[in-house]
Length: 160
Image 1 (cartoon, rainbow, N blue to C red):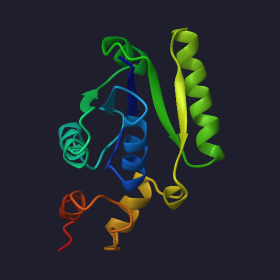
Image 2: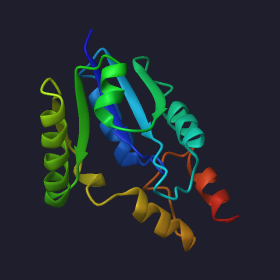
Image 3: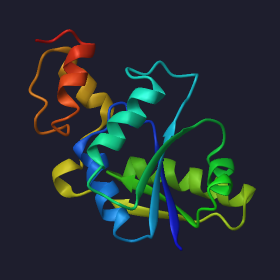
């Protein structure tokens, strides 16, 4: 059984994330979405909220699981007996950072492999940070977020 991990903060999950999830799920027997619980950041949503949102938007994918984790990604990969890590790339700047992380992980664990998926063009500009900025000022979120997530984001910003 081929198991992949797709890690990230997903704060909140965007249509770009969902695009990568759906494509990656077709490539492996099981895809585990690892929701990073990073205490050094101040997320909009708790790790539990992000896990629940991801479970909701991926409920149509039978081979996808969602779980929060903290600490090193390689430790999470080992605990889950995963074969590979999936990372989405939007731009060359993403590649530089992701390559550095993949090489660091591979140095720490020589069996560690990373697969990069290029984000679909329609989502190449999209990030959770951008979505939060649009939401903060009451902008239209329909082209950025799964429909189930929009009310949750609006609620966080007290948007009616």
